Amino acid sequence: MTLLQWKPAYTLGIPSVDHEHRQLIGLINEAYAQLEGSADADAIERCLEDICTAIAAHFALEERHMREAGYAEYAAHKDEHEDLLDQIRELMDEFAADPEAGRATLRQRLADWFGGHFATFDARLHEAFGDH
Image (cartoon, rainbow, N blue to C red; front, side):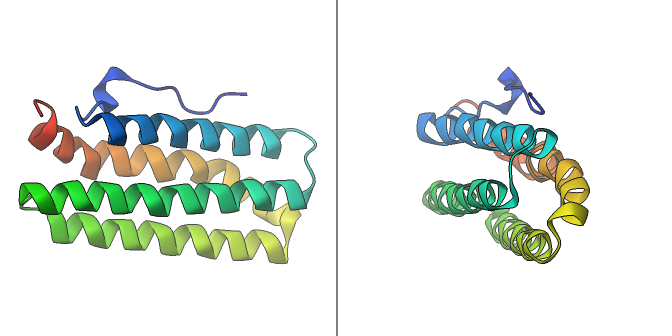
């Protein structure tokens, strides 16, 4: 099952960042398929941990590129990253406490994490780095 599709508009022009964006879409789609399928709670928790780890590493990479380029919106973007990681960890805790109730919430939030962040903060990065 596919929740998110890669779009050319997601390309920042920084190969390492673009590669990681594609990987994150793959991980999110994998988690969504598990939520829609018959995966047990432990498998879903492992997948969510993989997503959280990958997103944290990806955010560090993005932040390094923003710092090196003197990106004017660095502080706001970094704050958004920290907020997203907090939200992900909170949802992981909620899922661990009550997997059945957490499934519905996670289905909705998986798309929101990537799509919402990309449509706002990373879209501005695209404007700054698109010709990189």
